[in-house]
Length: 214
Ligand code: MD6
Ligand code: FE
View: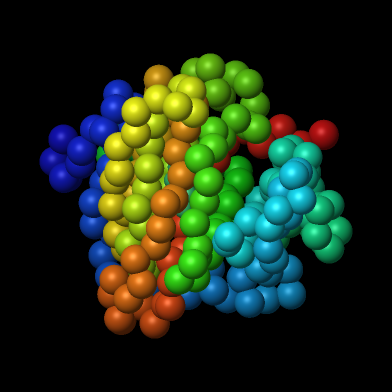
């Protein structure tokens, strides 16, 4: 492979500094415009009733944090249709997947914004179509702004874990036999992102295939 990358587990590949600063800035602006728009950021409440420690907006299709299902409208928030997924965003994820020899045709992107206290508990992403999970179609993650301590474990919650720092412009391709590994964000390190982005905190985009809305 000609670009720098680290295979953390088979099918779980870190692509440090994949994006140029210009590309990062463009993506960050695009996400902030959407997030600050009329169908923008909200703080999801999960099934147990707790609030997530991130602001979220789903593009292309909405992921409902109460039902753990995908749907056309934001049924757990304001009922508005999910904003479209801009092709310029998807193109970045397709490039990252191709760089590690995987294929993804994204139809949904979950954008998360982390402030200084942002984090995400250990979870599996398994709400996409079963055939995509079985065949290991990847989720591609793009990080912008402050560095996150990204934790990855195994197929059960208690398995041993490793920490991967996800910095601005990094990609992470999460597919193949690793598609269902538990993972989360332990912390975001304040003021570690490129000042040129004008972004306080961290944005993370996860591109997915197979949301299977009803
Ligand atoms: C985050 N990422 O980096 C949270 N999920 O903020 C995820 O939960 C994630 O990075 C699936 C695949 C890649 C990821
Ligand atoms: Fe995830």
